[in-house]
Length: 338
Image 1 (cartoon, rainbow, N blue to C red):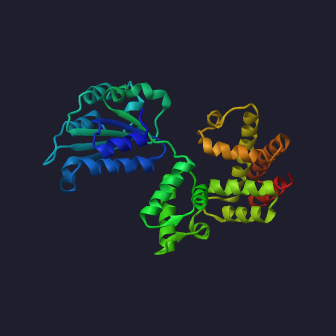
Image 2 (cartoon, one colour):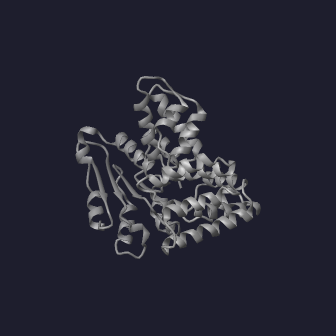
Image 3 (spheres, rainbow, N blue to C red):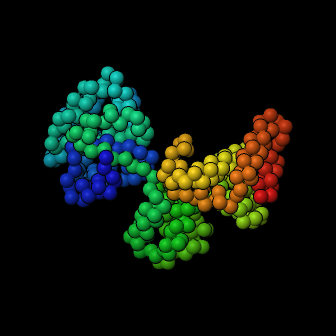
């Protein structure tokens, strides 16, 4: 399996394979690589004739065959992208065998790329045709350090300077999504205008916190006993359109459960990479490290008690025994009695 950085080398050297399978959570990065390959292979003046993208589970073998066997027009190369067709998730499907046969002999002038946002790891055997005749690239969420480096480079390309500590804070606020980081990056650029230096105040003023970042901040404030900060963050979450009081109650309660699990697994000397596998969906190791750091501020007894309390308040809200806004305030007040 190839790393995205190895794909970058192929793109820059123009030594691209005829066949690829791209998949993974980091779709923003995946789409950027598709654009880079298209730019490298296809003349913009003839893109309409030499670049095709097909999409969806209704695609048939015939649809794909027609494009793969087509020839370039006024160009040496042609590129075909097939997204989310789902054919390689089912080796017993009627289109699987003939498609594998077709892809075993892709013409030299063609670059065929299949992309899937989600692909079951248990079905990797179905990708043998790509192992033998091309490349498989998994686009996993980037680590905070990788995101910081990408941000730093992006700011530098726009003539901006940012301290490394401020880049780290920006990534912390944005979360793992590269698309979110890119959106907030553009907001910061627009905010500072022609000014070269970007400050911590600029980032704090402009960058939107993800829900997960706010929950992390609430837990940090609980650990430090900063009551005012806890309720300020809570107010913002509950007031947002996506995060009603009942949702916030569930998030806080779930976080107590996660901290309890991480604390117990860490005490068993499991590394972050192994602990990450206990989460469904799987959490990135750097998130697990953050949870591990926070769990050290709380006793096992406290985390058990608060996990159960969260379940009790959730049941009371769903049963109509207590108002959801009152429930989240009461639960938060109990969290502060650590």
